[in-house]
Length: 269
Image (spheres, helix red, strand yellow):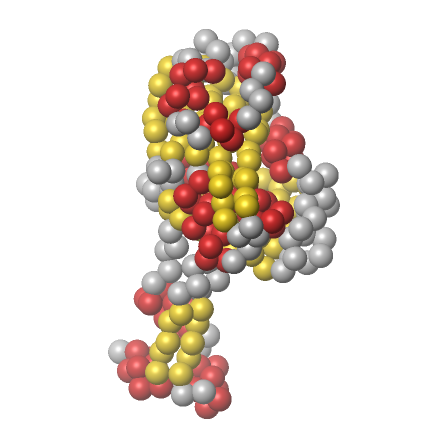
């Protein structure tokens, strides 16, 4: 079962999230048919997005993570406050160096959403995300995200994100780093359970345990609203070419088919 365990550790100086997202990532990789380095990167970004979902302050909130590569390819992931996480891949995303990440977080209060942008340098996702937190959020954050694959299957995915709290101990980040540097196999240790990992290596104040899942929010109604937005003229042009309008969701692969008779009925409601 996917799990994100959140705690306050190092005398309350650090907000720690320990994440096991293996099943979530496994579902995403299977749906999109990726493997190797591309699967590892996709899994890491799904895990990061799940973490950001835990930071939303409203049930109406949502967050999206978009990575644009120099090749023109892109990876997009999103999560709502219920931690329904989804993602899609467009093009060759093997090289992370030089890519740009954009994070948009909306708590659903009608205020302007938070926007964070950062340029990735090098191909280590965890190091780049640490730099994102430092540049865009101005918070010293330790990131260790992993996604281990064998062939086209995810063996283990998850990691930890530790953010320094305002007014916390100055040596808190270094203490976390020292603890992690002594762990030989982080994926294996997290695989024993998020609760075990947090209690063993970072005993502190328990906050909450969340259960993210890979789940798309597409529906027939949502797809029709997109088609309807094209306008009657363009819709009828599409029906001249094909008596059916077919739309495939890029996040989950579900296909929605609208026949000519159904389209006319929906337009005349």
